[in-house]
Image (cartoon, rainbow, N blue to C red; front, top):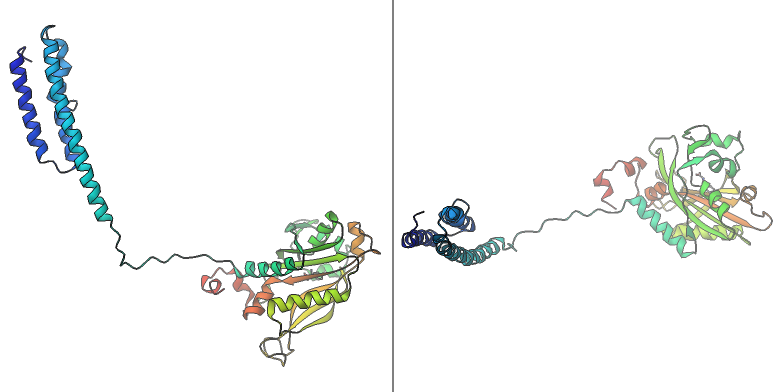
Amino acid sequence: MEENINALKSVLDKEYEDFESAVEKVQTLSELENIENRFIGKKSLVSEYLKNMGTLSGEFRPVAGKTINETRKKISERIFLIREEISLIEFDKKLRNEKSDLTLPGRKIKKGSKNIISQIIEEIEMFFIGLGYEIAEGPEIETDYYNFEALNHPPDHPARSLHDTFFIDENILLRTHTSPVQIRYMEKHKPPVYVIAPGKTYRKDYDVTHTPMFTQIEGLAVDKDINFGNFKWTLETFVHAIFGKDRKIRFRPHYFPFTEPSAEVDVSCNMCKGSGCRICSYSGWLEILGAGMVDPNLYKFVGYDAEEVNGFAFGVGIERIAMLKYGINDLRMFFDNDLRFLNQF
Ligand code: PHE
């Protein structure tokens, strides 16, 4: 740099003129950035001059520094203003481009829905909650004690073989019904007991009406003066709530080790109104649940006084209810995850 202030000034004036004519045509922020680099960036003339200040004589240095800084400031202020202006223009342009086209058809949102089995469980729960029942749960991996022994199946009881049980070892198994929850609940609660227990159950079975995993709801009522009339009323009211008031029910004698007397409960066939058809195997009736008065033997296992209390219990197969309610003829469809099937409910 020549140590002559006029010469320096005219170089800087020329630089500023170049800057002005470059900046005049600027349209975008990135173009402006290039110009900023060129005129006040690290490699610009102004920056080079400032870097070399140390080589100038002591007298010339402050005069030169002031002049160079003035030019730098002028350029940078100008850039600041232009940047504001371009930003506004670009923002405005962006908004214009983003304008929604309200005439476009909307995109469909795919909604999930509750599985039919869950819907029926909820429906049954609501009914029994309305009667004052509580909801209980138990483990799906059970011990032989809760699944069989405390439900009045001694070790060599033939009824054990009716359940095609998945054993994990001699003592541990996948529960074959929700009845073990009866024992677990009574162990922890004193009577009166009004409880229902929904959950998954497992048996080695696989055909049109059986799957290895299926769903049951257990019901248990134990209180001081429970009789067969209460039992019948409860199940009849339940069936009417789920299937409609026009359906009849009947109690067919049956055997379960943990109820005495025991019954299977049938509901009248809706297809033929009881006159007999293919759906009900020409009997006019469809089986929907197993039930009975609690066998007093069970009370010994849970520390209740069999002289003091009575009760009834029932076990409902949820898939079966769903099949009958909606006329589904293959149980396996519930577990195939075919949306064409599931979306119908
Ligand atoms: N647990 C029985 C079953 O799965 C049903 C049942 C429950 C019967 C309660 C009587 C009382 O077959």
